[in-house]
Picture 1 (tube, rainbow, N blue to C red):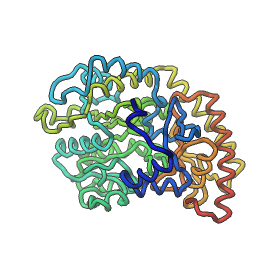
Picture 2: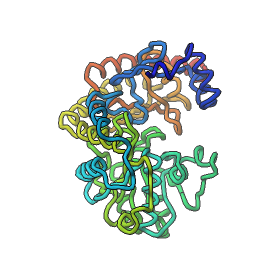
Picture 3: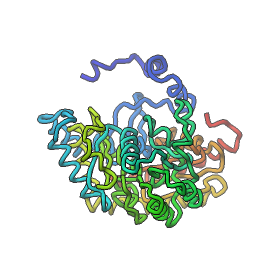
Length: 426
């Protein structure tokens, strides 16, 4: 059926029509970058270009494919659910939504007791920010400089000006940004007692996964408590066992007032996101439950995908394998770094969340291109192109780790030669 609905004479024709009808700039950017990828078949941690090229996927679309592409268990659960469920009706109590909400609360850091559903991460961030404003009766939202929390109405204002200014959403009076790991700047931003919430990714992804300094996140939470602000943990990319714990924030001893999950909770099969709130922060749910509506938020088929994803992710053998693979890949990457210390300058790692640093302002773009040529798909960090985002999935096998390291070693050496020759990355 898909072959009947989607037909192109060639890859070049499809790319031309992508520029014409979809997104001209983005399509051309990838072509100019030497990554003319058009994904066709996908299975596990492999994606295949329409011309047959196989790539190990360590981008995972921001963690959407934590469990791999078309995970058989999630597919089976959704396929079975389609015999009974559809999207559902967002106005009414739902078997699937209620079951998922209960499971999420059971999995969550202490104090989170209710769940609000969205269809994607940006919508979920908007819900979290609206919730914080209602609870505190304050408007101001503090986020981290070079942050990224999505592209929707409120979410885009919390992120870097590259995304906010284009759509006239840069509003520093309501959405001030402070440097990461700077407690003095954070306290100064909160001191006026007019901040509804601080929103932070546990490890900022689009900024290249800089790691929080020891005690930093816990101290930010303490400052929030001192000045009457809420702490929103954006766990869209760091949750679901990527750091070796189900929620990355728990590794820092922080119980957030609000937690956001998305991307990977979908199992890579059906869009869904969720906002977990405390009783104190989620008061609007009792005051006016119709205050936020989302036709596709918590779609029942998505809830089934998320329930199965949460169950798989929470298995003891998965957390054990994440720790094993993290150690294996970390040791292998450090050996590669030792061979190129003047080029491969740093490894930021917490579990399977990794940022690889290179000694060139656009260094990760050189590495990305060579990785693509050598059968690996990883992406540069948009807001710091020195850093490559490197995010293997939580079910990755030791044998795939070894293959991945072999391909990374060759690619990093070739990218070093490219950069040192004075070539442009794209």
